[in-house]
Each structure stands twice: as structure tokens, then as C-alpha cells.
Image (cartoon, rainbow, N blue to C red):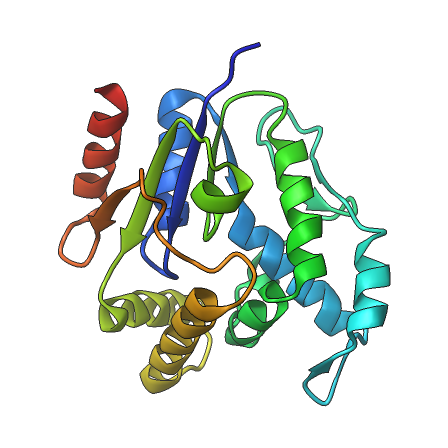
Length: 223
């Protein structure tokens, strides 16, 4: 069976997830949110006593993670990704998890485990996958690659508005610091750093609305 892979990489809060979901719906592809996967394992580490006083117990974490698995739900109405058979929601979208996730993502055994899971999840058909190393590491030969960027203050404002809408008490300065810190950690880590693939189309979403960026992506794929 011939399948297509669309890789959407970029910095935090550039619209990757929203645009990737729309692309998947438009093309009738499966959407794989790798950011969700890293958030879930961060939540797993935090709630399994694998972090003590801010220090990750790497040996214990690696052993525990090896026994975990991501799968698709059997619900035919909405295809959900499950972690050890469980679904997750807003509990993995907090500022605490956002602060932790880049630290977790720097661990080699975490990336190795999740890349294997991502490739396995995508075997059943064409996919749109978003993340930070999809077009460079997970699927370097993806059929189409996009790299999304945006001004850090604009991205922080988007994230701030999202968390406020959920009722979280947050400060804009905290969100901005988190965005800048994540950018630095993601771009400078030794393993699979965030970078634009040479053959990726870069789109700056700072001054473009969702609809305009979506149209650019669809047009690029159509051509």
C-alpha cells in the first residue's frame, strides 16, 4: 500500500497542531500529535514518582517507560491516541508539564522509545505528523515538509490566552519565559535538536491567520 507522510515541524505555539489536524481532515489522513506523546510521558514521569526534587530518576524512568505503549482507540467515530490504554486531556496541557517536557525530551531513551512508537503508529496509512524532529529524524524522507516559526511574544500571547480560557491562573511573563526557554532547550539539545530540514517549506505564522497558513500548505501540497 502506497502511503504519504506530511511532516510539520516548528517552535511551540506556532499553530502546528491546529494546522496539522486540519490538513489530516482535508486529506483524510491520520493525524499524529507527537507533542501530545512527549507531554503524556512527562505527565507519566511526574505522577509515577520518577522525579524527585526536580531531578529525573533516569534509570527508573527508562525501565518504566520501556513497558509503556501508545495505541489507537477502537472507537470508529473518533480516532484517539491512548497511552497504556488511557486517554488524556487538559491535565497534560498545564504550565507545569510545559516546563517539564523539554527536559524530558532531551533524554535519549525517551526519544528512542517515542520515535519507534511514532513509526509504528504510522504504518497503517497516510499521516500528518507534527513535532520538532519529524522531517529531520523520524521521517527524513517525508513526502512534504513544513517548518513553522513565529515571534516569541506572539506565541506566548497565544498560549497565555489558551490557558486563561481554561481557567488557569498564569502570568504572561511566566508564559513568555517558558516559550523562550523551550526554544533554547529544543534548539540546542544534543539529540534531535529542533531545526529546519533543508527541503522543508518555512512559514512565518506571526502575521498570518490560521486560514491563510492553511491555504499556503494546501496549495504547496497540491502543486
